[in-house]
Image (cartoon, rainbow, N blue to C red; front, side):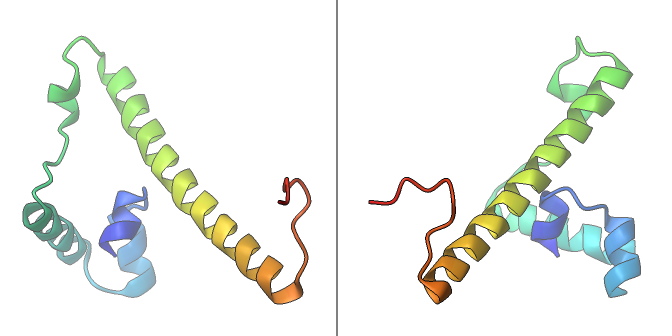
Length: 96
């Protein structure tokens, strides 16, 4: 659940999908952050020269970027698995 939040999913969406409350999910993320020594980035302190809409866009783009990285990793692993199972290299591979 924590990794889904870090990848950009909203706690309210996850709460609807998996049924723990939004607050419970956010508590798990906060606890994981403390355990791992992470600090939650606060948009207001990230760059005071940004306007509120710019901060909102920056947060949205960072969230989207994390989600895309997760999806790329999943697709990469799936491609490798299918290539191994079928013995066929995916198109676009340089193949050694």
